[in-house]
Image 1 (cartoon, helix red, strand yellow):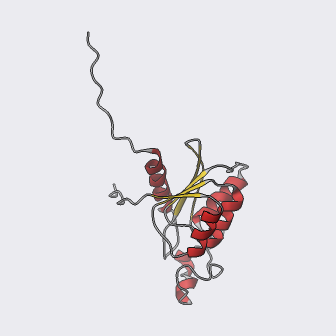
Image 2 (image 1 turned 90 degrees about the vertical axis):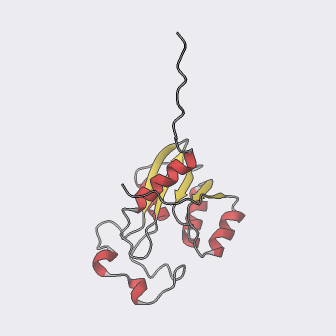
Image 3 (image 1 turned 60 degrees about the horizontal axis):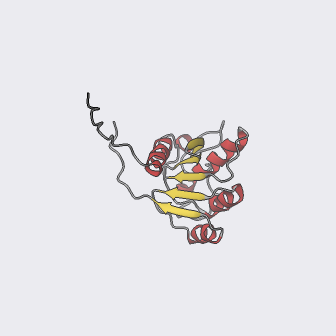
Length: 162
């Protein structure tokens, strides 16, 4: 009896798989301006996730309104004028909170990190960042490059909601 030829499935390659998870994580965001998700991965295993929003236990911008909008703060400027944490920050904090080493990991994030997050990525020992959207922060791009952190863009159309 001859073995039947198995049909190859349409499995996404690893970077696409993890960026899709980051997109799903972003759906938890409570930011009124931009929904961002992040996933920290090592050896093809998810270590931690994060999305942008207010710290645990305090009101979200959905309830209080956006301070940055009220003050007309442009995107990419005056990060301290926000109630929320960035997705990358929350993923790094979640890993630390649970005692998970992220040294040598890959960060999948739906938006290019800002300069504050870039500094955290560098000092956390993250070796690569995979991004699905840009962000107007030349300082962050320059610092990641100077720190020899590999940056890869995956431009893709968002999957339709099911």
